[in-house]
Amino acid sequence: GMRLETIKAEPETDARSTPILFVHGMSHAAWCWEEHFLPYFARHRYAAHALSLRGHGGSDGRERLRWTTLREYVSDVARVAGQMERPPVLVGHSMGGMVGQKYLESNATPAAVLLASVPPGGVGPATLRVSLGHPLLFMKANLAMSMLPLLGTPRLAREYLFSTSTPEDKVKTYCSRLQDESYRAYLDMMGLDLPRPERVRVPILVMGAADDRLITPAEVEATARAYQTQAEVLPAMAHDMMLEAGWRAAADRILIWLNELGL
Image (tube, rainbow, N blue to C red; front, side, top):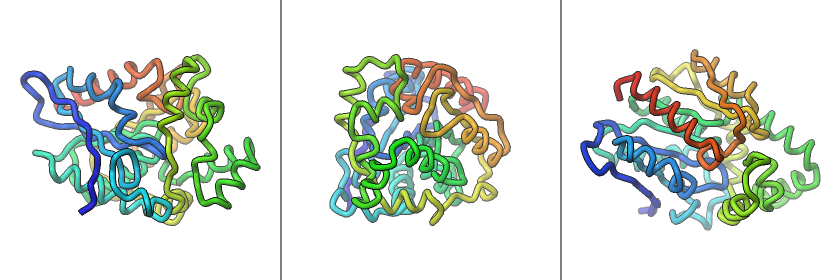
């Protein structure tokens, strides 16, 4: 079958019973969790796993990435989660948050965290912001049916993913690892295949970043309302919360919440 890349960090001793599965966003892969989140959660005794959705990172499926659906991404998460000893807590970032929301509609999981997630209403508002900010690049992306032009330079990566204070060499390194994204999944997130929050019955932590130019705090609030909870918006952070200088604040908030749930 299709090979899916997974990266994991295991606790040295005395692992907690609930593992965590981290799901990356658009144009990223498992690597984005590897630098900070995986070792940090392992240090706090969680078995921490990250997957690369099909067509991303070291996973198979690159040749038909353009037409990969959101549902296929959900099935990738289901496959990796199904190979774990027990159902993991799901942590989804950006597009991975929308994949997570759709996963929760029909799969058992003890809890989920949505980080700077696409809201249940989809990427319409984010699309509008990008198209107004960069009309020609936006047109080019749609004509090429390729999302990479919108993030493919360090200047654009910084504008949409990172804080102004993030060092330039870091932005360049991360930008060099970004890759194309499925155009079909983008259309799904525009409205072809949106989540159904009313079907979800598990505790959800909804977090966002105050300086996020892709998913605004207002959209994070809308996600929280849809799941009948309060949004937590972290100050002085941008979209890539797991790579930002303040990543530890986000990780600690998740740890406290999991602790409150007894997980």
